[in-house]
Length: 260
Image 1 (tube, rainbow, N blue to C red):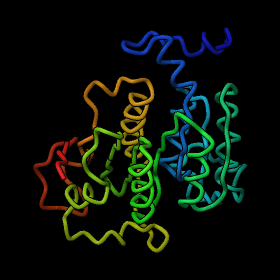
Image 2 (image 1 turned 120 degrees about the vertical axis):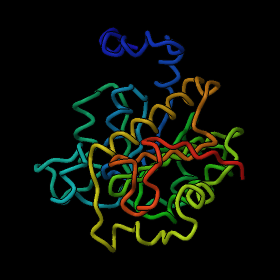
Image 3 (image 1 turned 90 degrees about the horizontal axis):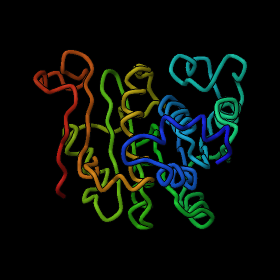
Image 4 (image 1 turned 120 degrees about the horizontal axis):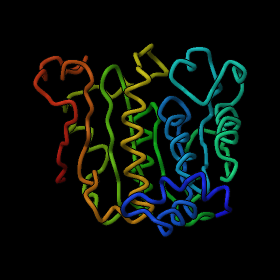
């Protein structure tokens, strides 16, 4: 790293288990951020300030007024432009030392195959609205041994799912069925069709948890305890979730062990 770059990230370098080797691994990594809404913006910001070498930003949407309350990389001046372009503008100001690629298209297997063919040390962060997309990306990662973290947030609850090749034993589809009511209608989480509630601090909490997991994988710290076989649910208000009122005694953070 350049002297200025090394000085900027010294506090991270002196972390236990990190050091110069960990920082080099982060710098050599490529992270695909799928979805540049609240989750993707928060994750991209944290990845950029961790000095991940390359970010690939993937989203087909444009910045709207209702996005600005929680999607931190977008601003009034970028209303109406592609979210990936808006995010790139903001991230360039935050960290000029990293590479940023943008894809203004819906995520697909073809896009994932192309990225997999071009980049080594690839990992994926997923923050999309549709659970069908989560399933598709998870299936790709399993078949190609690509590590990934998935997050979602609705109301006062958020979740984190981690896939680490060779360690994880459950698909995200199975994790969701265990973590939520087995009879939950996944369609009600589709924000394209409904005006659903979000809260920026909760997005930040679950994203921070997910990014720590991803960096542990990048640096090799994943030989420590990870969330690879856990579906982590965060509940923010009185230990209950607005869609599961009966679960009033659940803790703020709940680790649901996966064994399927």
